[in-house]
Amino acid sequence: MKRPEAITLFIDRSLGKHAVSGKLREAGAQVEIHDDHFPVNAPDQEWLAKVGHRGWVVLTKDKNFQHRQLEIAAVAQSKVRVFQLSAGNLRADEMAQIFVKALDRIAAMVKGNPAPFIAKITGSSKVSLVFSHTRLKRYSR
Image (cartoon, one colour):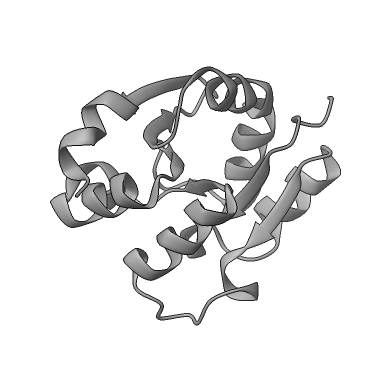
């Protein structure tokens, strides 16, 4: 698998520190881990703003990013791109496989859509837009 062009993936705390990041790195992805940059209890608004400023792409399994007004607004204001795993109750190695299989689709979504946005990744590694840049405009100040 080829390395996604100029994309740094940011692994949210919900995905752990090693299994997902390790498999993504083995696949050639550039990866940053939440706990390497932020305190464990850092509020989403704080780390989202810094991740968005750095242009990193968030991978998470936290469903709050598409269901809570506060998180949606934080994504919109941070101009961050979020990919949320929609399949629940998976082992770390299963999540890692899904993300690795979706790498090319993630890269294509990033290249073809302006930030911010929220996309979901299914258990079969399909990627689809949930909140587009246009839809998120109403949440930014």
